[in-house]
Image (spheres, rainbow, N blue to C red):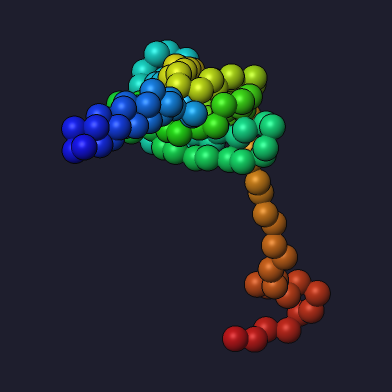
Length: 132
């Protein structure tokens, strides 16, 4: 009787192992600038365009990044670092697969903001009065 019970348990565990396929995917890659130099600390945002869910990571000191456990579907990858920007559309993440997307950042638009504030006049030129 115990032998039959052991065989049933082993069969059940074996069947469970067969059905335990991964239902998610991964995205990995490296971030470089236009000259090919590694960019560490770049910010990467991955958006599932079907659901709108966003995930963010930072590239490590060797420019490597990794997004784990992504539901299958279409994605938009946006990579930024001071002065650089890149966008990749229509990335397809498949179940039980690892996609590799190496990113090359191009110089983005430079924005300068000048703020002018009105200040009180240091010298009153409208009168001839002297004062301290």
